[in-house]
Amino acid sequence: MFHLVADIEQYPRFVPLCQNLVVRGRRPLEAEREVLIADMTVAYKVVKETFTSRVTLDPSNLEILVEYLDGPFKHLENRWNFLSPEDHLCDISFYIDYEFKSRTLGALMGTMFDRAFRKFSEAFEARADEVYGAAA
Image 1 (cartoon, rainbow, N blue to C red):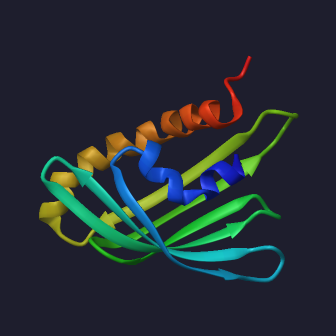
Image 2: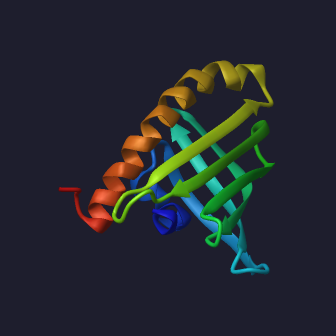
């Protein structure tokens, strides 16, 4: 599951509201870690926004950290932690905290973003079924 979530270039295919994602750069770090700089475009009806994030992939610790760099938010951070209690199972912890810069954009997009983030788990589960096969 770590690799499925780390494959951010595929997000436009299945993540709610994600219209486009471009990785601007990749840089290896120590201990198998990697940092990516990515632009994600989210769209809902007539509203379309692009924001830039730094994504740190840490496969040794099964963690992914996303830190906001630029765009319509005052701040945005999310973390993924993966735990495999048994073979072929994975527990995932997902944390997100964000605030829009503009009150108007926050009022317009906030409720919709909240609903979309609730659907993220369903989207990733469906993607895992597609990539790895449905659980029996």
